Length: 360
Image (cartoon, rainbow, N blue to C red; front, side, top):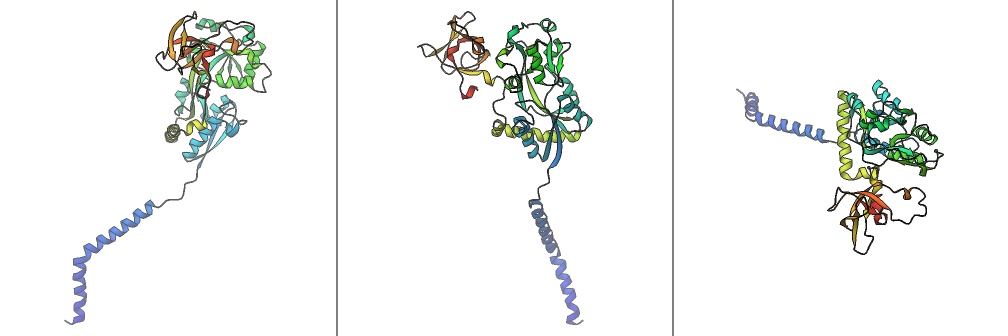
């Protein structure tokens, strides 16, 4: 056998002994290449379009508000971060809800999470909690409502497309409905209804707005603790109940939670929590350096340290109408929210109220 004929056999023996090692090296190199490609930043996927229905409800949402209103700005921010490009279309509240049911729209907001809506829609975590009240015309006197029968004898106004709180809807067999809050308040001013059910802040926005011709000081809202006249309700982003929507809603809630925890939420939706407009700091009136908390008859009940905070339950009439010539002390009914007397409902001299930046 010639030297030339031996060379292939020598090479073959070398491959047989070193082959497994070479194969391992090749596998490692290929794996490294795959991992490198997988970790390489991929181009950003384009945002998916989403049609979202809403209405006009100042100060929360509406085409006339900056950025469509703070709640609209919040929803747009959440959807953008979730990979969607929302287009908000404003219409009536009744139609906005029907558009989601029919499939003409992907979602609707902000709606109260009533039982009927929870049965037919997927709801996000609460976007915002708001206070609902019953407005009345002071010129006709304050209605006394403490039992369902009291409401049965009144003409209760409501807005088409609204779902109200359970206690009110159970007590009112038929609402006098209007197409918008503005029409409802015009009816209240004209005496066509006795009370009007509306969100506190939206109602105040109508009364102080230029579209309403009446004097805002003529109107108040019932301020007792009865669930018949007052409720705090969450507002939600809603979608049809489908597996695809469940994926969207899961991501929506995750982003909403991150915004809340980071503090960005308060930058987008500032100062809209219920009763914020009625929280005050209590300061001493006399020389003791302590706040005097009084009972229903104006007698001293407790002492509290300066800086105690409270929620005003009923603003005195003197603060919203002509006080006349009376020089008697003005007592304000409050609920203490911190300190040793936390939770107690008492009265304070009106001079003890300090509306500061925290209580706005």
